[in-house]
Image (cartoon, rainbow, N blue to C red; front, side, top):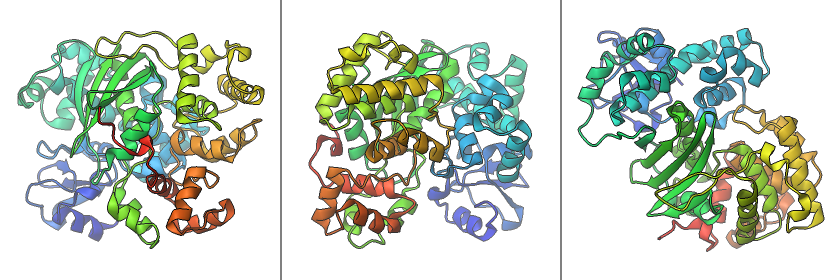
Length: 490
């Protein structure tokens, strides 16, 4: 969008928050870059330049505005919606791959050469993978400086910097303040003194309807791994450097996030996973605008706009849970998953609640005895087949995976039908156009609205909802009085 100068100018002059994260406005006279909704008086058009990423603006010599804090705006919805090389790379960078494995590791996961990966990112975003990762490190550092009482040296290494000198130089260059000055300017309030304990605000684009989002996560929660407590969804996180526990609670203008980490180097990746799970980078104006064009669907959208697709923090975990949930009730699926967790999950301490385990990895589940599973023999074979494919790497479901290839590999596994493939595509792969026409709840809702309700006819009709069919599913499911559609009250 940053190349459409007239559209960008209109967004800046109207301070339209819907475009925050889509592009960044740099001001030549002040050498500052802002989000489109910055509350200051808009600069003259001839003094504005537009960039597709904060990293590109930083690389061009601009520093972040202290008023609107553009580095903290919601992410571009493109990176979760698209499935091309650049989008997959951005999801991997957000997950911390460059910090852990370098640019060669990023390129290897994408299946491209390092040179090709860098060229594609530079062409579209104006910054290469190292600059994009650097911008993310700066944002992580700012969060730690402002919300914790940790020593600056600890923050430098937790944010991913190789040295304290690089940390100091980057923070000063990006924010025009030293780390100490940044902490001094932060809003007064209690700071977490215990390493790994953080209180954050996760931004999103309005509107956001939390009912089906948190209702689904709470109603399908695996005992020991997830719970709803004191108005928040809580769960354990299996992260690259250790584990964590997160509590997420909906607020009118943000998601309240409480993170406890065993290793602060996991902070950026944990935030990225929570944002993906809650679909916080979605563009509800674009989604709801298109769905409203169908007169049969429009009343549902108008009644409760801003529905998101509840996703997952761990794609492999969800694939296992999807198989456990085949042809059984929500309660039975939770029971099966709870047994797996108790038998094979790693135990963790949770002094603030009832969480007890991490969901077992595919390596841990490779040791399970299929005969111990209380389910039909064919489903046991399906489950062990999925686990084996995940463990061997034949099935890749990470944030950088190719969605079409993952669908093909899933469909080739015995016992994996279209419903399971599309559920995994919707919630694990994050495909906004995933669609489950054979789902009984969806067909029942369609029939009630006067929509075609046979799988083939419903698929044909759904073409007008593309590329947002996963969101149409949420609106249709919401017509049923199932617990997944209601925000828990206790």
